[in-house]
Length: 161
Length: 423
Image 1 (cartoon, rainbow over the protein chains, first blue to last red):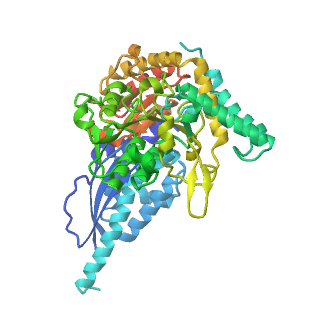
Image 2 (cartoon, rainbow over the protein chains, first blue to last red; image 1 turned 120 degrees about the vertical axis):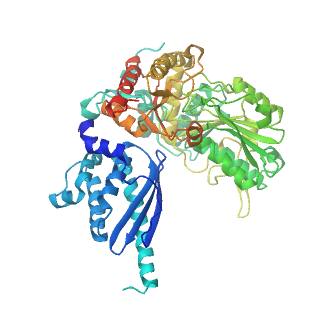
Image 3 (cartoon, rainbow over the protein chains, first blue to last red; image 1 turned 90 degrees about the horizontal axis):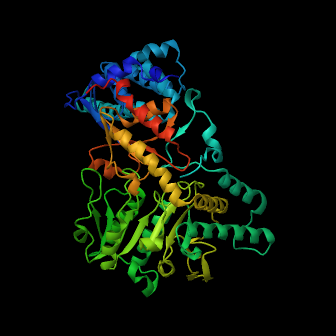
C-alpha cells in the first residue's frame, strides 16, 4: 500500500475543512458531551451531540490531532448529522468494521452507508493509526449515549410518548 | 571512530514496508541487539540455566556465576563496584525503587539509618521540567503521599534547563534532587556538576536518570558525584525486562526495600523480617537472569568498542541529524543544535514540522523504511512548555550510519510538500 492510497484526497480535504468544528451550544432536547484523548500522542477531541426525537440533530466539536483523526471527525460530522439514531448506529458499526478489515474493502451495502468514510480503508493496514481514526467516533458514541438518555428523560418529563 | 558494525546486528538486514531496507532511528526508545547479546542470552538458557543463589548443584552454581559476572560487567561500564549494582526490571523500576524506599522510610521503616530518606511536610523534592515521566511521576507521587513539596528546575523557551536560579529551587529543605543525565527529547547532556554541588550543599540526595547517557557516552559515577543512578538494558543494546540501579553502598544498605519476598532476607519469623545487605535486599523473587546475562554482554560489547569511540561516532550522527533538521524550512529542531564536537548533545534530533502532525510525519518516514519515534516521548510537561503536543524523533546508536541520518533529513524535507503545507 502506498502512502497516497492511505492519504486519499478526500481525507486531505476533510482534514483541512473540518466540518462541524466549533464547540457551539446545542439546543436539541437531548444533549451529550464527551472528551477523548489518545494517550500515545496527546491528541484530543471534545464533541457535543444533540438528539431530537429519533434523529441526531446536531454535532459540534473542537480538538487537535493528526490529519487522520481530524479528517475522520470531519467526515463523521457530515455523515451522521441529520441521520436517524438507527442509521447512525449502523454507520458507527460499519466504520468500526472498516477499521478492523486490515485494508480490505467492506461489502457494498456497508460501503454505501459509509460514503466518504470508505476513504479510510487504508488506515486499517496500520494498527498504530486505527486509534487516530477512531478518536472522534469514540467521542460520538459516548456523547450519543448521554444525549439519548437525556432525550428520553426529557420526553418522560414532558409527558410525551 | 567505530568500524561498520552492521553485521553484528542481524535485524538491520531485514526489509520493511514496500520491501525497503530498514533505516532504524528509534534507538532512544529501544536499541537493537548485537549477536554477542543474543548469543549470551541463548547460551545461558541452553547450557547454564538454574536457580540463582539457591541450591548446591552445578547448574545453580553456573547460573549464579553468570548472573554475578554480568553484574560486574555492568558495574565496570559505569566505574562502580559490583555490590553497588542492583538488578531491576528496568530504569522505571529502579527509580521507583528509590522513591518507594523513601516512602517506606517516611512511614518509619529502616530505623535511624533511614533518616536521610525521610520526607514529609516542610521538605522539598526537586526534579526538572524536562524529565521523562519515569523520573517525574515517582517523585510527584512521593510528594503527594508524604506532604512534601515538589519543585522543579525550569526549562527556557529553547528547551534548555535554566541553571541560573538553582539555589532558589534547591532550597535548604530539599531532601532529594532527581534529574536526567541527558534529555530524551532535546538530546542535551546535562551540566551535572552545578546541580550536584548545590544539592550536596544542602544535604540532598542526587538521583540521576542515566537511561540516555550510559548507552551513548562515557559515564563514571564517581566522577559525576551523584548518589544513585538508574539505567535500562534495552537502550544499551541489551534485552528488555532488565535494568539496574547503581547507588553508593552505604546508601543502598540503608534504603528500606519496598518489594518483599524470598531471597532478599536474613531472618524471617511469623512477625518480623530482617533484610540482607544491598544489592540482594532489593532482589526478592526470581530475577530475569538470562536478560541480566544479556545486559552484561551488552556492557562488555560497549566497553570493547570503547565509550569514547561510541560518543565520537554518535557526535558525527548528531551533527548530520541536528544541523540538517534545523536548516529545513518549516522544521523546528527541539533544543539547541549544539556542538557535537564538544559532546554536549546526543545523537538524536526531535523535530516539529510546522502544519503537519507528528503521526503524519512518522507515516511518511515509515513509508520510506525509516523507523522514528512519534508523540510526546513520555515527556508531556516539556512538550507543553514548548507549545507542542508531540514531536518526531530520530535517535542513533553504534550501528547508525551517516546514510541513515541523511535519509531522515531528506525524508523530512519532503513532508510538508506531501501534505500540501505551503506556508
